[in-house]
Amino acid sequence: MKMRPLVVPACVAALIAMAAPAQADPGGGDADFLAGLKSAGISYKNGPDAVRIGRRACELMDQGRSPADVIKAMTDQNPGSTTDGAAKFLDIAENKLCPQHMGGAVASPTSSSPAPQPPPAPAPGGPKAN
View 1 (tube, rainbow, N blue to C red):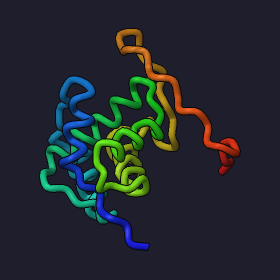
View 2: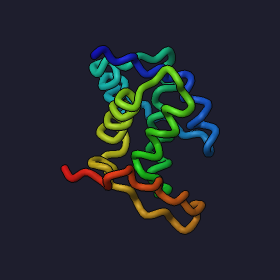
View 3: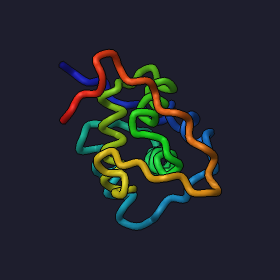
């Protein structure tokens, strides 16, 4: 099955609009993130925008949103993307930009963060164990 690449520019407006702009790190994290996207076959038009989306995804998880919520936001705002593509993008962001969230770890929101939205209802049949 051929996966359609995640088109990052359409996600930029959605994720960046959810909060204050993120600062890009000129160090290795950003370059490693972009290299990870390229290696995974995820295309993007503008590197700094791709990094902002990745950092914004990390910020959303810092605020208590689950990886599933972040993936859903990405696919909702980018009809050309797939859940698999958005999940790969988020996995790379977690690995390269916010390793504290690797494996789906969701940070407790800080007192200055707004309350996170409740998690989505479980899928029929309940959650699947790994």
